[in-house]
Length: 613
Figure 1 (cartoon, rainbow, N blue to C red):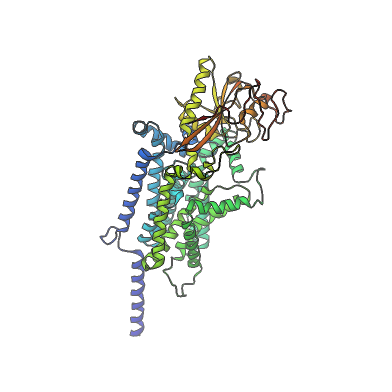
Figure 2: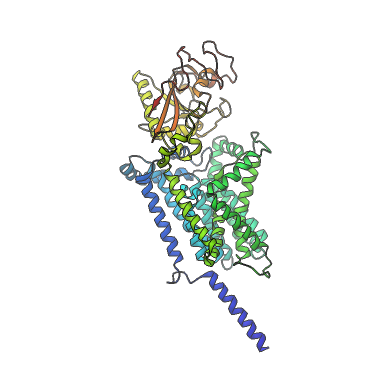
């Protein structure tokens, strides 16, 4: 009996030692540097991001950023494609930091982007806390935190203000508080309420967070230890708060605006008649997009980490392991946070709709799993540890270079394809950041056209075919006047196709305010056929003047090209003809629908009056 008792005591001591090695030293002890290292790294990255935005950033507002800024000028409970949170954040930041931003940089761009920096830091600390709580290892939490600046999606998301920034932050902290609720003694509701409120804020940023209760529900169904939580009020309180509180203002807004946002959401996820069932290309785009936004190397590491996590879930616990195993429920929790969203995005891609950033919140769990795996690899040392350390250095350097791709423009200028009618700025195919360049110069060129028409005594307005270009011009035009988007997405019909069609007056639905006025039409030169030609050909305007090509060069490379056309006598869409007969006097039509001559008979070939800047 004494031998059995001694054996049991020895086994218990070994288990305690193993648990203590996993948990690490008590928080705040001298021997526990990981929390301090993680905090110092987060602060350092935030400082560098603010310095970049203040003195080193050559990026103009991208289309989505500018669009959200236009929303912030017209606060509401919802918008055509999103909830209200992103607009509220930008409005608050520009109100508080607008003066400082104007003084330091001459524009509101720094102020509008500051929430991205602050929320990015908060997300990074949430990743540390999630990893620590889930894996029991502060070392894994520190490593997961260090991965974020090495992954392009999170690194660029820390300086560019889009709805993904508050989305990922909300998802991360909702996961942290849900884990606290699961492990709380008794039936405490406070952690669940906190998780529900945070998740509701995420829903108001982007609808992806609606997958969060489903992820937790799946975890509870599969977990023998926590399945009883389905019979307690915590999970259901969190779910009701997430869905009800998050969707409440959005539903109210949609009810007041003809359910425009609901229709847009159905279109985006492939649930409308626009869905292209069974197309394989969107699936490949989704899978390839994952590798791109994770930086390739970390996508491979993520696949390996997922394989290990599935192994931890399926392991019986009796088999010898060649590495420390993640607790089954811990692995299952992270896999549920990743898997539900991944399956939803895969299903949307099968319906023909996909975006690489849709999986952004799901990558948080993946980062934690990679951090856990790296903790074991680095502890063992050897060649694999050196490879991963080198991979981190290479990817961090790659992220830095992405922020400064213009450094390489003189080197690649000779190797870029020549501009074509289809791609007037080929650089934008290969360098995504080039799409955030040239808008200030374009705005100055458009402003000269507007001033010339105003000098004639007219009352001109600016029209574009896309909301992104319209919003960007509104930000950069002197005085920031309202610009208008008259999109062809669903034909020229009264149906709203973006947020601009819901603000009044607008050229689509309020023609009386615009009929007879001249308009300056601005369009991306990479998007033939000519939009201004279509406006004339379909009798939306009476006359059009020659097209002016605006090219913007940086360091010898064309970073952007746009066509600017003055059209006269706006008629509204009442006279719109979907497929009009060829109109005499417009000249022989070229491929793509661009006529040789304008209404007044003057020649207007593509690229006429080219202005190089």
